[in-house]
Amino acid sequence: MRHDLRSVLVTGASTAIGYALAQRLDADGWRVITGVRTDADAQRLRRLVGAANRCIARVDLRLPSEPY
Image 1: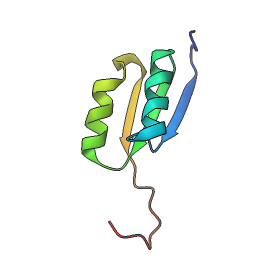
Image 2: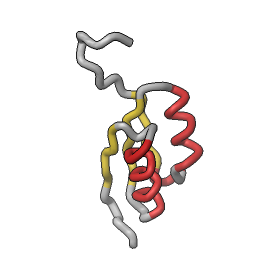
Image 3: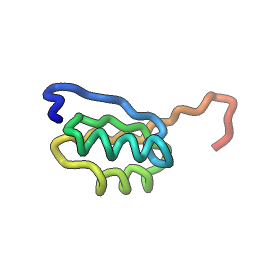
C-alpha cells in the first residue's frame, strides 16, 4: 500500500513497539519521522528505514526534572 505524501511521527522508536511500528510503516511506504534518545538508536534506525522515507532525529523528550 502506498501512502504518497503521508508522514507519521513515531516517538520511542528505538525499542519494542515503536521500533516495530517504524519498521512496518516504512515498509508500507510512509515517510517515517522518528524520535529517539541516543545517537546509537538513531544509527540503528538509519540502517532500518529506506532513504526516501527517512527522517530520524535525536529528541530529548524528558521533563526538566528527569536525570540523564
